[in-house]
Length: 210
Image (cartoon, rainbow, N blue to C red; front, side, top):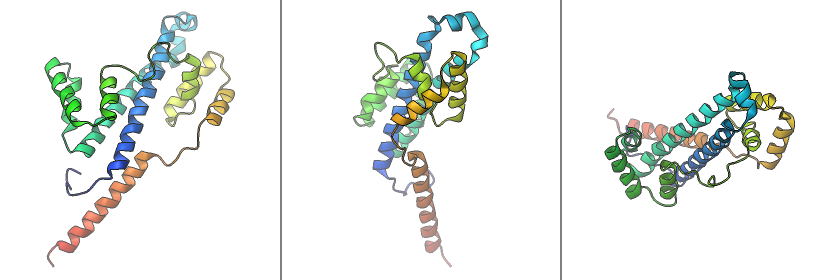
């Protein structure tokens, strides 16, 4: 897009991808909150320590996934609004209060509702729908067991075995409650981008002098 600014993006699709990615951030944070809520209270973790490494790896994994997913939201914003949201995202992570306030103000002024409110809530470390009592630990593990990420599934399965959960039963129950997934939005936008680049290349070839 930077190299070919004349390319017109599919705005409704980008909005859907932004919303889906924000949903991912919320989901990862809810998982993280469920996992962390067990840190201090679980005897199995306290007694076994490093033997229950899968738990600690999952805590770090979902934290990283939430961070990277939020970064992707700002990449999508750059495509949507044409502003340098890479600099905005960097300003939000510098630890400098002035840079943070400036970047947050840009988000408030440029991003449109309802994404604006959702993203500001995430930047304020608020997780939508996760205030009050956190998701039960077992429910978080069950959701991770059918996550698309093979790393997440593997660690969740290992952790489930550690605490004596029936992996097969949890997986069947979770999949039965999930609707059939449509083609991933990320795949669709990449296909669309490839099509637009090929179109721009053909247009450029026709305009080139003989």
